[in-house]
Amino acid sequence: MNVSNYDSLLSKFVQLGLQSKRFTATTLKYCNVAARAALVQAGWIIAGDSLSANCVAGTDSFENTTLSLYPNPVKDILNVKLKDNVVVKGGKILDTNGRNVLSFEGLPDNLDLSGLLSGFYFISLETTNGNQFAKFIKE
Picture (tube, rainbow, N blue to C red):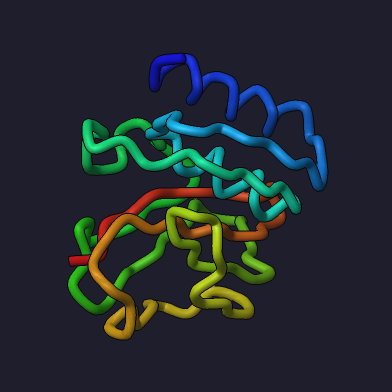
């Protein structure tokens, strides 16, 4: 299965809302880190897959009209902006394996990410408009 097909499969699993499944994906590569992270947060155990080295860096494949992150890539401080009338109840920063590396209540004006290693991460926000995900790169 190629990267595009596997990414589509992960997205479909997210849409179905399935919880706590075990999935073996030996040697499969993915770029859709947000979908994979959402499944892991839903209790999935996904074994054997890995992030493709051919993924395009940036946020264009995870465009989100409600959520804006800058700068991206970020060195230490990540600014998070939401459209008016969107209230954040809480959030998490997830690594590419879907592990929670930072949690917060509400939405601070900026997030200090100086303690994170360089790499790809996701922000997951629980808002009054549902959950919002976005990808960012930590330098």
